[in-house]
Image 1 (cartoon, helix red, strand yellow):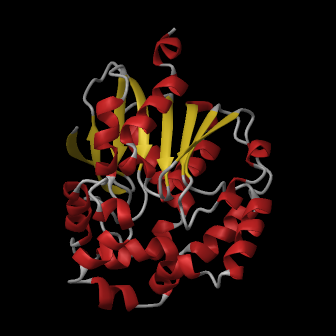
Image 2 (cartoon, rainbow, N blue to C red):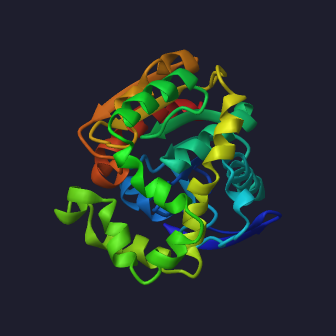
Length: 292
């Protein structure tokens, strides 16, 4: 995909675009500590009638490194995406999100539900599903929240900035685990994420996603019980140690229509199983039907 910079009222962002401007837009949002590059392999298997548009979220990839922590509240990140979509003069679209991109995608879907034709989420909790959050938190507390250590680490003032800078080649590969070590996730992919994390101030801006969680949870509490009206596909890598199965409890109660597909993969399901993820998306999005 081609990359370009786009400047909107909320800042300057890098956007990957398949370039087929007559195609049906599908907005694809990455998570932490990745960039929009995570969709490159998936895109090779996607229906050519889809126009893939993949922005780098604020503070990650090659987008701007805002140091104001309030800019990383998920509803604010969603407003970034809406600004980008509007600047590209896109009305209705498919929406895809993984990890933090999946949270931002949910916020976008709640902000402008009439414009989101279909929603695809991967390995992230549902921000309106309060019961599942409570149940997952209970499981995590039983194991002393060990899988969440990196979140607590980054929430400490100044620690990420002091300890990650200069150590990105250790920090980033750690999170891709065995799939990265065994080459299931290609080295060039992880190298690209390392490159982006070496950009000035990224340890701070990457940490801002976790430093704002307290305010995010207060905001999500106000959304409790809301349902997503658009048809939704949830793709779950079932070897995830952070987004554990309990987060999927009651999931059908929060969508008018949802289909869950489970795959043997860890958290970064689109990096590990790009072809399978793309095929499920093709089947769900049904581009030809959407054109009618």
